[in-house]
Length: 525
Image (cartoon, rainbow, N blue to C red):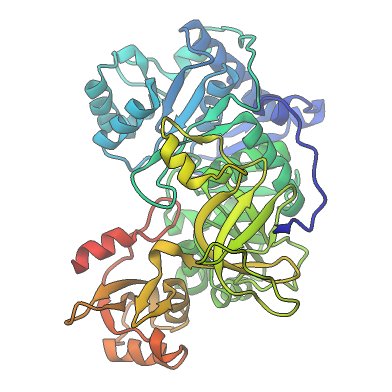
């Protein structure tokens, strides 16, 4: 077992709203909490807290409170913070929904979460309305924040003037949010995260994610995803920083907002790192305000991290976590320039880890160098309560001693530095050898003609699994399949060579930046 190298931090036993806002000073109330990156409109902390209380009051007036779930289908706009924390302030549970979901997917999540209210915005109204109709939700239970005929709006609810209700619940057991995750396998499941889980992960993260109240943070990673919810929205608010919101990623808008709003921290996923390192547009914008680029949601290769750091003259760090851990478990602290940027760094405070070998024994951490790989297990106050109505899936993921089985393969050093090798289910078995797609993807991205890449296991003519690369070329590149294979072969062991290559226009990815390997497998089958 490996324990965090940091001393434990205190985790108050309070609701997340009280933890974030309960001790705010008069000075901080007039600081800017949120900026709409598209329009430049600002919201102070005083305004935000007032809106949260009014929204919670409006929900309570409609009978929504402890025991109720409310669906939230909304991109990153300032109103998200009001509504999300208003739901929690009312004592209800927020189930945040992927803004890219179809009507059927929205309906499935609402049904599974037993959510009878849905909050959205007009651009997403068609699919929200279709989902509501599937569930028989009346029009007044579909709130459209920016207004739509026949539906209550945010302005309508705030103008009612209801005070926030007095609610009582146990923060250690009461479910605050219900995001959906596939876990290590299977269909999406509701991840029950309590108020204590959320408070704990913000308190833990303040130690190694060194934000302060002078920082301006670009929030392009979606708030509906746990990474955006905890590391951007909740952590930034707790530390009284300013969040600059973007409803979706667009490189030109992304660069414009950085330059105009002088953002100092960029929280990204690896695909954005590829653009920052390689895209010619970056050179046309003033990026001098950027101090730190922090990557999560998928492994970031060290060479790519150094390329971003060199181009922007900033620090690059990465972390690790998953929805089931609220999400943060590891980070590379800003001050630790000695830690390999290919790693995910150190365990955050109050967190323990184990590496499990294939035979079920614990991997031994050597005195020098990295350990053998093993499945990463996590224990700490940020670990979920369980999956909603899925005791079997919960038991598969979370053992009786509180260890969460991540499904990720990692190595560790005696100094407590962890590196994610790959996911158990994504490892390619080539002639008995294990091949990690992430290793090959990192090598591919080092080629100047390759803009993006992904690797999966695919059957060859004999039906044997071999590494197959999907490659997106830089504009004007004439690199062919043989050139791709030769580049990889020059950098890896013989069994790790890419055996098949397919050129495509874009690598399919989730909103949080994870490669959608199932979509690539569908192209191969």
